[in-house]
Length: 207
Image (cartoon, rainbow, N blue to C red; front, side, top):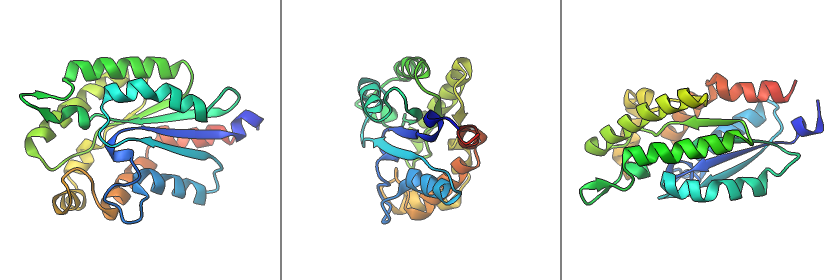
C-alpha cells in the first residue's frame, strides 16, 4: 500500500443534513455513525464534516473547494461526499430559494470541478415533513440522479426509501420537520453503509 493510499481523508460537504446531527442528542448525525461504523470495521481514515445549516447549492459552490483543499492537499488521498438540495427548495415568496434549473447548473459545476481533483459521491436530499416542499425535494432528487448519471458521479437516492419509512417520518413529525432524531439518523446511516460506491472506496484504498 502506498503512503498516499494510507492517508485517506474524506470530506462530507453540504448543507443541513450534514451539520453535526441537528436533532440528535448524540451529536453524531448520519455521517458520524457511518464513520464510526467504518472505524469499527478496521479502516483507518480521517473524516471532516463540512456541513452548514441553511446553505444552498450556490453557497456550497462558493466554499467547497477552498475548504476541501485545506484538508486534502496534494499528496493526500482525498475524497468528497456531497449532500445538498433541501435548502434550495425552501419557499421564498412565490419562488424557491434556488430554482431547480439553477440548482442543477450549480451542481454540474461543482461535480465537474471536483472530479478533476478527487473521487466524489453524491447523496440525494432526504424526505421532509412539509408535503408541498417535499414534492419539490423529490423532483430535485430525480433530476440530480439524472445529472449524476450523465457526469458519471455515483448517486444515492435516499428520498425513496425514507418516504416509506415510518421511523423516519415519525422522527420528522415529532421534531422540526426537517431533521430526524437519533433513530432516523441511524436509519439513514444504515442505508448509506450498504451503498457499494461507498464501500468500494475502502476496498480500493486498502489494496
